[in-house]
Length: 358
Image (cartoon, rainbow, N blue to C red):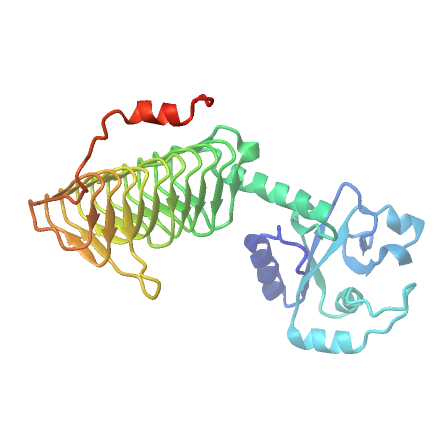
């Protein structure tokens, strides 16, 4: 059923195995705290399943039965074809009950049951039940890792089904790990981090409020706080991405550093320093172009690199420069207007606005 999202793969596997082993019908049952509204599983004195009776059709005695039908079956296809064709709406609601095939199976091929956890087969009919199911799923995921992962506040952490966490990972508060995210051993994930389809290498430090989607963070990296890694961002080992950095389709080499920057469609080598306020101007309104910065280069603060452009190995770009041509290896690139001083400017400005205060 589409409204039982907590059903486990292992439970379904056990159901199919039981049906195949015995050649009959296998069904999931459960014993919820309150069975009201569910169909009850009626057994004989020996415990053999006889039928399922819906709540509205049940007698007072049958309503006291605690075992309910989860509505999930495995059976030979040919039996199901015949049993469903023979269904009749002989019940209080005048409906065709699929559950009537249980009585048909009990009289012919036999019925086996597997008792499932009640939460696992509980249905969702409104937003309150949806929220409750999501909370149970969250708790299940925390239990999966609690033996080898440290959670600062497990009640505030969300981990999706396909996420994998290594040994001795530390996870802060209000963290969301989504999709195919993989986090290697020894990683520290700070408060408010959201990782989606992201691979994190061993011993990385993800500072608070970092958001990453379809990125690769190498071992020993430090990222954030308040960093954003967009698809195809790739950080080499020991790279450092600081506050308010945004990377998109960019490779940052081993030991390179970037702070307060936008780096898009770029390939950045090893041990490069990218100063604060740097931007790769990668879009001309029609297509994206690439910026290449080779090993050991130094990019001064407030630099604009107008792609396509290449900065050579160990070159230096002075602060405030707009780079529009390739910079040779080992060269200094600098483009600034001459600095001028206007003497007495402050006094003339005060005279112009005598009644205003700063």
